[in-house]
Structures are given as structure tokens and as C-alpha cells.
Length: 224
Ligand code: CTP
Ligand code: CA
Image 1 (cartoon, rainbow, N blue to C red):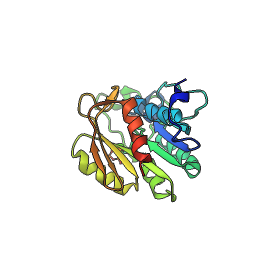
Image 2 (image 1 turned 30 degrees about the vertical axis):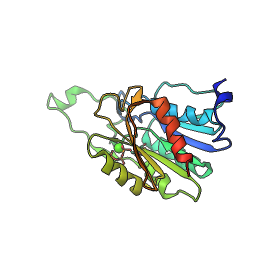
Image 3 (image 1 turned 45 degrees about the horizontal axis):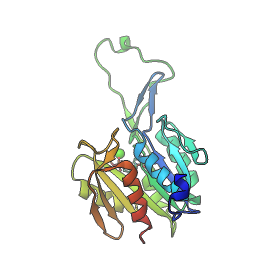
Image 4 (image 1 turned 90 degrees about the vertical axis):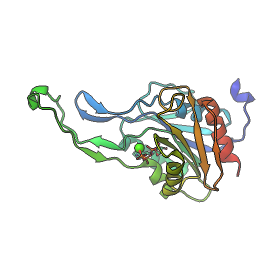
């Protein structure tokens, strides 16, 4: 099998990967979310798995399936993803958070369905509360020896934002992409990454299959 052929350079490592979108309910039939497919995270998880790691995936709603000996925790909301990751992180050696977590959740309308007659054709205003930043929280509680990879989805100032997030979230490595560009970001099989690590090493990668991006990210993290 592929697993037998892959290098074993992550053997015995406990690895956490988040992936997919989160979904934030508003009323009985509506939610706030984003177009993340979970593909990048699935590639990151499978790469670590093939290299011998014990992988735990915390997955938002994607419909993806994983190797049967990979641990999968399925969640819906950002707060559920935060709870799962907070519980898992102390027992992990590495984490790579690829999930497109909703930064905000709508203040719930209630258990029932909002009827358009309620607004009498006038439109509506929905209020939002801020969700926890999972990556920042794991960075703040990072122990000696633990390694943390984050992603950054940007439309502007990619390099500056990558550097800011690397420092603000206490990361070892950040992979930033231009989600406004064809061949990078949501719902495509490729990504074009700017990669920056805590030692100041920077690399601009060409457009690559997400499988290859995943493999290179672990290569880069294991360099030290
Ligand atoms: N992330 C997270 N929890 C959140 C928001 C983001 O764990 N509530 C993680 C993502 O999985 C990603 C990284 O943080 O690894 C960066 O996400 P991004 O949306 O690019 O950055 P934000 O810090 O949310 O800032 P902004 O959306 O304003 O650019
Ligand atoms: Ca965000």
C-alpha cells in the first residue's frame, strides 16, 4: 500500500488537523457558513497518516471520508470545534489548523423558522457575536516541543498578514494563500502558498496540487 511505501518520519507523532467550514445556525432552517470543502485539510491529514503519524481530524460539515484507522471528530459550529480542539491539544505533538472557522455566529432567532411576513418586506438586520479563535488559543497554551501550523486566507497584503498572524497566534509555521486568485483557495484542487516560519524562513510556492502542498508543509515543519 501507499502507507507502506511512504517515509515513516512522523511515526508515533500525535497530530491534530482541523478542516472544513463551520456552520453557525440562525433559525430552524438557516445558517451562516463559507464554501470550504475541507480538501486542503484532508490532504494534510492523509499526508501525516501516510508518514506514520496518529492523526485526529476535527472536521466541520464536509461529507469527506477518511481512512478507517484515523480518528475523526465531527462538529458543526466553531464553538464545538473549539471544545474538541481544546480537549485534544494537550496530548498532541503537532497541530495543523486548516479549517475555515466562521469568525462570527448570528445571534439565534429562535427554535422556529423566521417568516418573511415578520419583516413586512422591509428587509432584516441580523446581529452577530464573535466566535473563539481556536488557533490563537492553542498557540497561547503551546508547550515546549509542540508544533503548530496555521493557515491564512487573504485577499490583500498576504505577506504582511501572514507575518502578523504567525506572531499573534504563536505559530511555528503559517501558510497563506490568495483566496481571490484562480487556482488558490476554496473548492479547487490546487493552492498557491506563501509560507513563513518562526525562524524567519520564507518561501513563495508555485501553484501546486493540495496533496503536494500538504506534503511540503510537513517537510518544512520537520526541518528543524
Ligand atoms: N482560525 C481558528 N479559529 C477561528 C478563526 C481562524 O482556528 N475562530 C484559524 C484558521 O483555521 C486558520 C487561521 O486561524 O488556520 C487563520 O484564519 P484566518 O481567517 O485567515 O484569520 P483570522 O485570524 O480569522 O483573521 P481574518 O479572518 O480577519 O483575516
Ligand atoms: Ca477568519
